[in-house]
Image 1 (cartoon, rainbow, N blue to C red):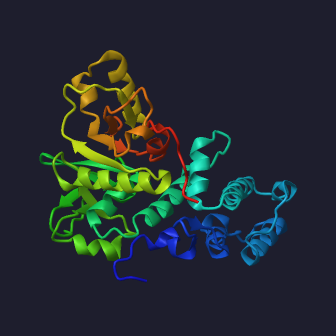
Image 2 (cartoon, rainbow, N blue to C red):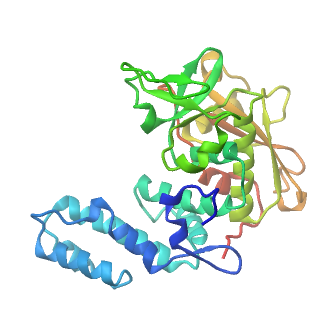
Image 3 (tube, helix red, strand yellow):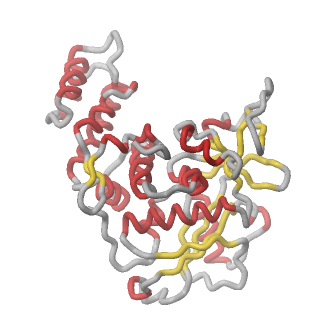
Length: 337
């Protein structure tokens, strides 16, 4: 394990890799899911659930009939097992986790809880960023699988992990240099050049806020994470440039990076302008250009593609990285296999 390792809890080191650098599921990775607290049978669990859990820990690829799951007496436990087995089926059906994720986001027939999808995104992104040595890019990449809360701090736009920030009730305090003690608020350290090296040892804590003010390293770092994500999964060479404003641009094609951004993009597309209140919800804008214009739909040609990231009215950013994969105007989409 290298010194600058990160996201160890993602399970990345439990997986194999194929010749194309795709992630291949292993028994160890599957066992880690069956060992999750949600699937540990409680003291009062029925015999069917206990036996199923014990046998899957021993043989995580064992076939499980629907009747066996239906025989579990506890309703919540039964639902948990249905989800995790559906997730296992998806991973075993495809040659790589990357291919499984693409199959998932391109199909409306697979229904998994966000927890499973976010975990899959994280471990694939861990693979795509394996050679990255920039903590700012890695912190920005957390947006792909961790909801973020906008935290006011003077004139800066700061993003803090929603879970760490404490949800909508507490107002976290922010320290630009170090962690400060406070009995009345949650203190969140902001990633800076001074503390960047600490990211490697605390990456699984998600406790560093990110300065996402226009013109700072935050938007540029997210642009790089999105570039690597798209290249890894679709095999296309693109450049992504953060913008501070969208002026006099021909909006030929755009991708909303979250549900709110899609709503804003649709409104801009149909009405041509946005009111000030709606504009205030836009967190970042990006311009995408393709190295090979022949990959792009003819209707788009050489026109830039724009990406929009926005916050909800309650100041949350919930990025949907699948929109990058399904929303770009690419003629042929290929998964890593």
